[in-house]
Length: 103
Image 1 (cartoon, rainbow, N blue to C red):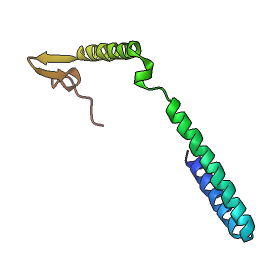
Image 2: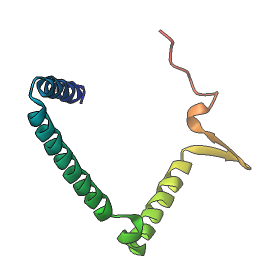
Image 3: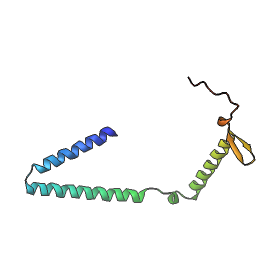
Image 4: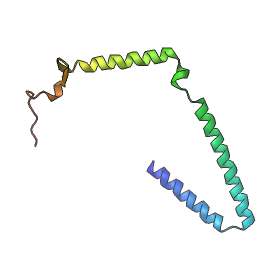
């Protein structure tokens, strides 16, 4: 990702340098072309955002399935704890467990 960002920055700098070296009429044409392509890109991105599936579009069956999965995962995690009334202690924090050496 860093390489992509660096390459994109280099490309922008090169385009700006080329833009400064051309005549005003060509510079205007270049600016118009860039503006046109940028607007097309914005329109396409807006269309993609509108088509993105949402939880509402997935329907109640998918939401119910997701909720059941989360509940089951929470139940499985509770098996790794000691419960003393309303106090829940993970077994990993049990002081009677032998601690590994520091070095």
